[in-house]
Length: 231
Ligand code: DC
Image 1: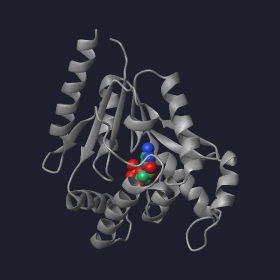
Image 2: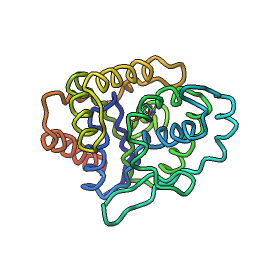
Image 3: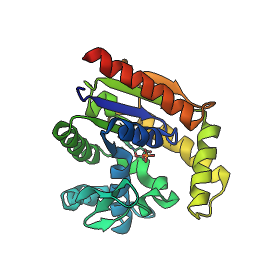
Image 4: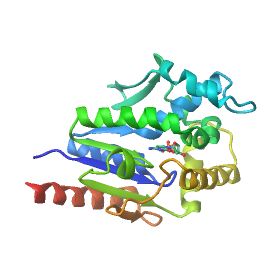
């Protein structure tokens, strides 16, 4: 079967990565979590004191070439993990501390430039890719053969994210998570450089009232149909 590029975009905590991971596994495709890349750059900026209480965006931009990002397969866990400058940062990049600043970093043109280029290289090297993010169907792979756009109500999304953070042992309140989800959506969709928006040819999926299995079955069946029709 001919391999294609699948773009999954959408709002924060709509279950994009869960779906994309499962779809990639079922199709034997490569999964790329582009949010992890923006999160890793944000962690770098926080570690260096370039974002947060004090801010020095010009220095962050100057230091971008020193940031080495790699996805490394963890066979035992059956997933890829984000490494930044040789260090496994998979756990740290998912914390609220990073979530608070990531949209700000993701709005910097030079950061987007660097990461979009890396993502395009990954996609061009590897046909048979499922990539999730905010601008995959619009900017990174505007010619992707298949595009999905995920949405769900802010309450549903914050509830999912809150449970995830509690499971990881983070001390957060539901209100704090809801506020973060809404704030990120606002910044992500109103920034000047490649704002979050649905590509004209993307299929919109509201999964507010859909379980993970139902959602996966629908997307998987649709994908198989598209791939078969292309043969
Ligand atoms: O998917 P995520 O929640 O891990 O993404 C974290 C942030 O990164 C999100 O708030 C916006 C930004 N992002 C982006 O601007 N473009 C992408 N392709 C992926 C993520």
